[in-house]
Length: 244
Image (cartoon, rainbow, N blue to C red):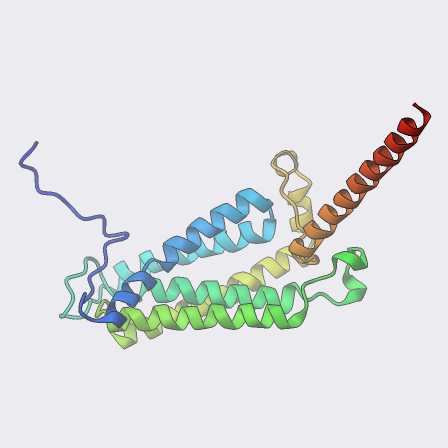
């Protein structure tokens, strides 16, 4: 057993040129999908938002499709790279394309509901357009950088990356359309009314509310109430001291 050859965990193992700063940066960009998975799970646990759950479900479906396509097409990686598995399409490019397109569609379309359709009080209105546009642009730039890094590190050919980006973007639009139908037909609200969803505190607030602003307003309200109580206690103490 002691003589058994050691294996590398390819999930996080990245080949790069240590003498090339760009190659070093590209090696870290290869870890973005893993970081996003951690972010997904953290947000699901912390917010219990059904929109995050739906997006993560679509993301996992995207990964399953990439797994199937690679074994169906069976195209090798570039000769310069000793990476394991097939290269068509690039899973990194497909993952980030799905993520960036899905996030952009949510921020610029689904989150920006017209006031007539909103059921939230004015104080908890959707996030303003400019921050949503900036975050959307940043997600697209990140997707482009990750896709380019796969070519730079010789893990994939430009064609494999392009196909991955196309597959991820198309699947993101398709999944967004499906979930939009799911919402418009009332099936989502039916699911959220189930006992298991209510027990797990699954909710659907992110579509209409800026959760950061809503949480801040709730905190400010509690803080002011607490300060009001503290203020009354201090006044009572002063009066009590005078009487003594």
